[in-house]
Amino acid sequence: MSHHPKTWSLTTVAAVAAVVLVPAAALAEEPGLTYETVLTDLQDPWDMAFLPDGTMFYTEKCQGLSVMLPSGDVNALLGMADTDGYASTENDLFCEGQAGMNGVAVDPDFDDNRYVYVYSSSSLTAPGTNRVLRLTVNDDFSEVADRTDLVEDIPYKPEATDQPFGGPGAHNGGRIRFGPDGYLYVTTGDTHNAEVPQSPTLLGGKVLRIDRDGEAADGNEAAEGFDPRIYTYGHRNVQGITFHPDTGQPIVAEHGPWHSDEITALVAGGNGGWDPRPNVAGRGDCPDGYCGYEPEQMEAMEPAERAAYMPMTDTESFPDAMLPAWDNNGLSQGTSSAEFLAGEQWGDWEGRMVVGLMGIGFGGTPLGQRIDIIDIAEDGLSVNDVSEMPLPMGSGRFRSLVLGPDGSLYAAIDEGDIYRITPE
Image 1: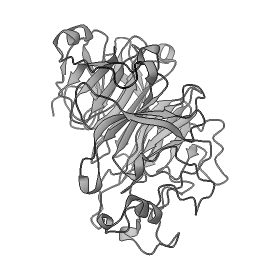
Image 2: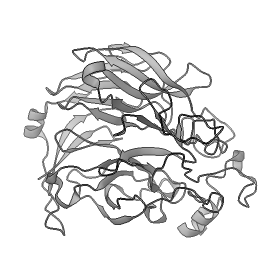
Image 3: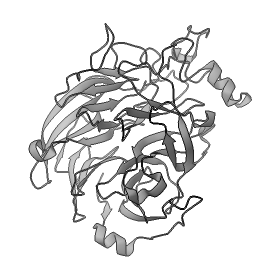
């Protein structure tokens, strides 16, 4: 495939983009919003990461890693197998379903070490794994080198012909972020494997916390017998992680099954309470040994009944499980990336968390492609208010939300665009 995204410099964008002003809503201090199209014609843009000068690294799930410079010029750095136009390619990197090149993060000391990190699927270990790669960027941002696989054993879901749900690459996690503690947090999915989330050794259904060499971070508090890289476990499919601006506590956004997307503040060694194994908690056998979508006749059940049968956070089995602050009103709509808004330009929204929704509902019915604004309590255990951001550019499957160094919110949608949303 060729790789020719349409690009503009930020100066040019301001002149040519369709800029729409959204008036301030109920509260006088809520900002109006304008938007600019930063990049378009991308293929499934998945994540973004910024340097202080506005340099933006970004990934496309089935293409690779690129960088947009402050001038607006784009350099395609590292491509997956069978991609064209990149400075280099790695033949073991591939995409399938939700898997591919997902999260990207830049090192807090980038000026000194030139490190950038990506989460990507690899065929080096059959039938495939997800890996965290560390790359070194050259001085003019035209190439990467010195690939180092920091984590090699995050599960990937291969093709399974006898499974009545999902497909290869499903429940793949994939977000990576540096926390204020200087450690790299890695979110992973349960890969539709019932044994994975509660397993002490399998790295799916987890949040990992590692140093820049891939070693376990100090203070993970993994229980005896657990892989020391595990920070929390018992997750379904975490695709968003951010950090409370006052406390630094990590907070994740997680996909629910037929119900209950969740926002949860993490504690070291904590259990998210997801356990889709059959023959536990009073359940019987389940299709392909995975109870995550049981029972089958979901149309006949209210969200509360669904959650009681197959809870996202099973407090009966795990009384000490981390409790979610928010569960999306008992619905599952595909929570993806999460970020906190910072700066007085955001008015009453300053310090609030934004979460991208991809609009997935029961049977694939869209229930709302939007960005929610969540006023989460400082202790992370409850929310004070949830509202919907009045988007100037319309809806989309919001895959990634990142606050840029200019104080604007950058939003990537699956349909192929990256927007800059600026408060006025």
